[in-house]
Length: 403
Ligand code: SF4
Ligand code: SF4
Image (cartoon, rainbow, N blue to C red; front, side, top):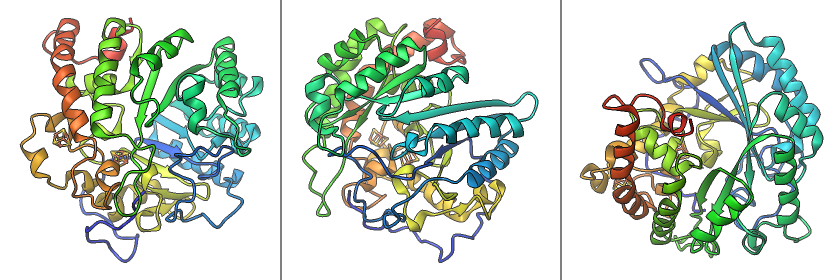
């Protein structure tokens, strides 16, 4: 990925505060093993990243002291609804006892009436009955990485020995289904599977998966040319159009995150995906040592907001650096200013603006894809929402459609 700095004015110190009321931090993305992983996927954004502030540190696991402080302080700050989402690298490398301790701390520090949710994004390699027991007992929501059938998945997703991981991940799928763990599939769209929308959809349905999130790859060399696995906006647009046609008859029973989020936005809800929010300030990343960053794609020294061992959550929420990052999404683009979808799309994702040439001012790399799919999907989704909710369209589509 290109990593040149954008042109926003940056304060010398991360300790500055933005004036006025600060938007609340509504969820955490916690990296208990930092970017360390037990796989070696060719397209991984985290591998060998020059700007990784912790790249030189071989051992990066969150201590129980940091975990306890994190749970104690965040439960207090976020009452009554608290969300802890774990990601990596590979979060299971922190070990099952680490997560059992997490639940123990949540019980110890949670207050009466407090809703606490836990989620994890995993490659599934280490998952066994013990993990499933924890996930089921405390209703965790698990995201499992699987890129499709074996020939697709094993093109890029290798273990450290260079072998494909499809068979092992499929064992985890079967185990989690047997153990009744709630999970969804995260499928990375790359140059191999992007032309196979129908194959992917049929494959996931054939293994009884009804909740799928497609993530497009956009990684570039420093000169701005795409890496071999990066997909084009046109390919992404066509993939989404084809998937929409496949999904529409199944829409009451299958969840495709892109269309769900779009429907939430049309219904006047805050969508689950930050890419459709007005600014980038709904969640923060917590690194293994308690450092805080505004987005998982920007765990870089220049974007560090604070540290939970030295700063309160209220201070972190008010930091000037957080505000500066949030505003990247609002930098004016002529195309967005006259775009009919601006009030839904809000200029796309700054990661996709910045990825190619390191400029937040650029147009989202996938803009063309969004326009293709919005033109096709928004009219029928609007009609569906009107049928379900009448004029007010208040309840979430997902809940109503899955009744
Ligand atoms: S840069 Fe993209 S992924 Fe990061 S917070 Fe903003 S919208 Fe979300
Ligand atoms: S679809 Fe493209 S032009 Fe329209 S708001 Fe989104 S990024 Fe901007």
